[in-house]
Image 1: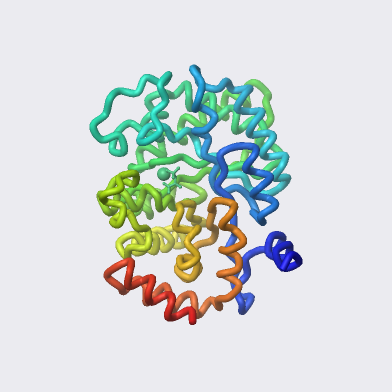
Image 2: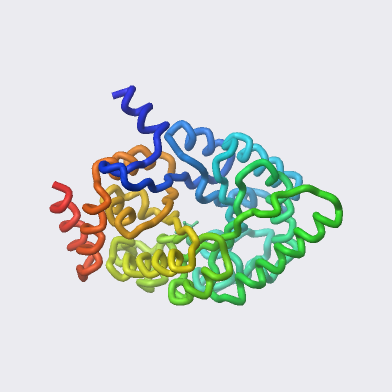
Length: 323
Ligand code: PEP
Ligand code: MG
């Protein structure tokens, strides 16, 4: 069992018929998560939630403080990808020193990229700290909560400004760094074709996508049964996003909690996702689930699942099809 655990940890997720490989990355919140992720078989980091650097303090972290963290994680990962998500505050993560207003609907309010575009200095500091250690590593930037085409264009314009300033100052950085967005708002799914023309990759955030598609607060216990990423309304949006990405020739991953549900593995594989990113503890289980499937089986499960009208029916169906 120990040998098998080591084999699982160090090998990629390949289907039983060896026809397809889906990359398995980890969601992390800082340096200490990174080593654990690597030991559990992460092939990279698909989501670094940088909010944690801004919590429990009285001022935003300086460029130097952030740079030290990004550099350390990039070094630990060697040449494996590191997707750094820019600050996603607001919603259920308000930060006292950033002077958030009292909001009646914080999840529909001033959060993520909306906050950052209104506070370009905070964003520019973070972007400099991400760019500076990028040479010789596979760092990628990801913007959260993108709702419109104009938002990603504005974020990219700020990134281009920072890059021009670094170039002028003779500071080296990875000129070809990939830029992506979280697809976690229904408008982004609807606009996926237009958004795909703006970026190098998508990562579907099923935690927020589910709450926004189902109109049910992800932290509200009374509506928790509605907040189910296995609902066909959510799965069909994932399918739509994957199809739009591939049509545009970009890769698409998924970094919400859905990836940690072993029953979801055949659907995510069958829908054609290129990557999943999940909490490190879920990585060996995900790889094991993939190893038990052929691509044809996964596609059949995904196709049948998408025709159901409830999450319960989908779970029952997957259990039946897996036995
Ligand atoms: C998501 O929304 O699915 C996601 C991965 O981001 P977070 O949980 O940090 O909002
Ligand atoms: Mg989110």
